[in-house]
Length: 262
Image 1: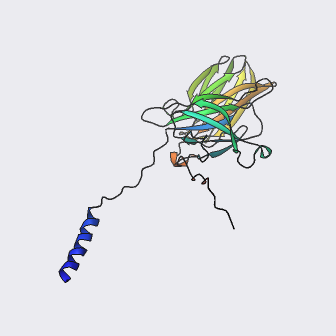
Image 2 (image 1 turned 120 degrees about the vertical axis):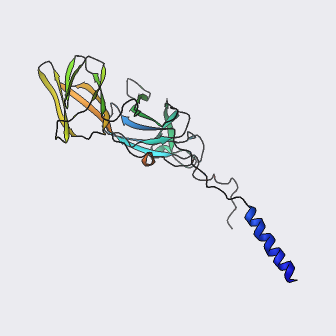
Image 3 (image 1 turned 90 degrees about the vertical axis):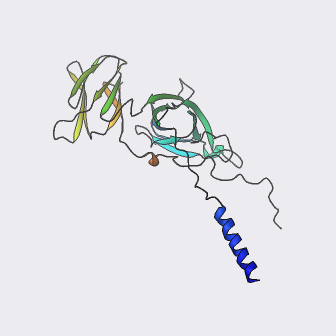
């Protein structure tokens, strides 16, 4: 009898030892990043997006994204083939039981780059009386396109302008752009941008600056002067992006059958 008990215990130990160890599931990394910046807009935008592109599903993961005029959003991660749908939060009086909280604003195709995570800047313009549809301008903000220490200036001024940025001096003709290096004066901690039209100084401002910074500057006319919209970026871990690590679906759909309460 003792022999059979030992045989059973030995057999169970052997069977458990043969079970293969289950490796933890590996989450797929994002294919790209994007940042939203309002354009020709004053106020607050309550937007959202589905990192996995499945916003049409009733239980899809939706990430809210609030942005304000003159300020870029946090970086957002996406996992799809590049087709991104921006959503807008509906007004409270438009929502109700069974109605979606978000509605589609517009579609934009983002780049997918082999071997690395793409990075994009989206300039989002809401509808106006002259243009009833939302519009999005997509700008490539990849680190290989615009590496650290480089800055692109884009002029939307109708006349030529002269610019000095740190130790760099250059000119821009109407509707043109130029990429230059941002060098501070030796021992400085800020970098200055000044813009002239002929002999007249129209803009001058200083910002904190480090060598790892990179960015875009948009120069446009405003009244008798100039308006400069600045978008800069410091390298940050991709894990800090909104939507990073989320699953395609975060909650199961409710069962159609619900037991009655007695």
